[in-house]
Amino acid sequence: MPMVQPSKRAIHWGELSRRSMKGRFAVVLVLNLLLMTTGGIGLASADDDQPVWRTTGIDPSLWNDGPVEEDTPMKETYQGNPIFVIQVSYVPSFGEDRISGNIILELFEQRAPITTANMIKNIDSDVYNGIFFHRVVEDFVAQSGDPTCKKFGVYPATNPLEPTCGSGGTGTTIPLEHHEELSHVDGAIGMARGAEEDSADSQWYIAHSEQHGLDPENRDDGGYAVFGIVRDGMVHVRGIATSPTVTNPASAQGFQNPGPDLLGRPVNEVLIVEVDLVGVSDPDGTLRGVTQSSTEDKGFFASLAGESGTFFKLTLVVVFMLAVLGLFIARIEQPLSLDEHDSNVSLDAVLIGDTVS
Image (cartoon, rainbow, N blue to C red; front, side, top):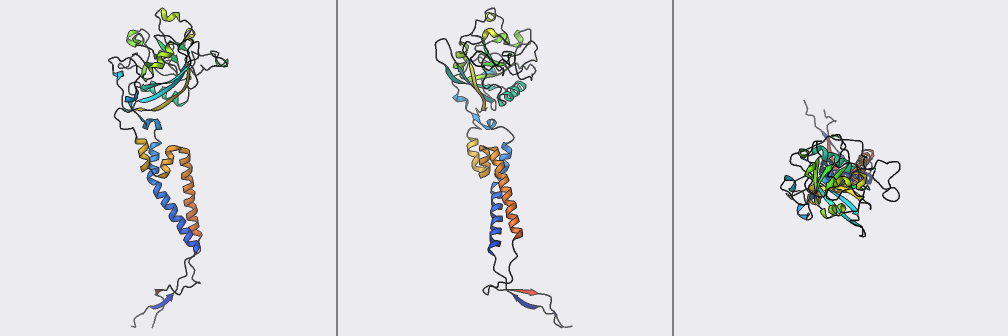
């Protein structure tokens, strides 16, 4: 039987069209952009799991104006504890100029998690911005945190629609939370409440000196919950303490109850300009500088994410649209031309279709 021999036909392929080259270049470009940013996208997603302030380390060695220390665990700072700043403006005494400054506090999140979470929520919601200290008793406490205590017109007038200044709040209460290692040392911050133990809302106070008479073991009413301490800016805490107020006879009688008391209202507004969470205590030095250096490993778009989450999301949408457009162009391009021959390019193809008998 004769062998079947394949025949050869020379097929001259056409020149690649300019349109084809453009389409393929677009696809390659889009794919490269996606590959370059894949790692960065993963890191950015991880950062979205927690607020930026949680990744910002604060060096405790920068604090040099703290309270008088007692031999308690509260004199030590702890890695990862939230740090927030109260920007205040006040007149320390008659005839003096108004002073502005910052009070830096550390929250003992591991010992008072419920109270700390409540404070963080209120700070994030801007509850404390623009309110004033409505009660100041020298050598005792300065109390604030009531969102209804905002001046209306000329201080000390408040909004006539909110006459509750000194007894107001957000409407969300938390249980009384004690810890044996937290007490009313100098500079302690605690939660104000009503007669009921579990009635604390948004109001808090800062002790101008040690006030262990407010600790639960020294009271018959359950005491008051401490959840943090001033780390820097005690000069302003003490300045607020001396700010002129209406005489408070309750203090002289030894009745100390950090609750609503109009007689402790400062004569001049003791304003809280703003309250911000700025970072976490970082005595180990493990977080300081990490945010700045890590952007080198995140890719271009992930670096932008650190600046603006919204911009980052929009960038991803644009990249996705470019990818779709590139693929669309690639699919609709014309096939290679077989009509326009190039004599300089010739490829032989073996076709198995013709037989020889």
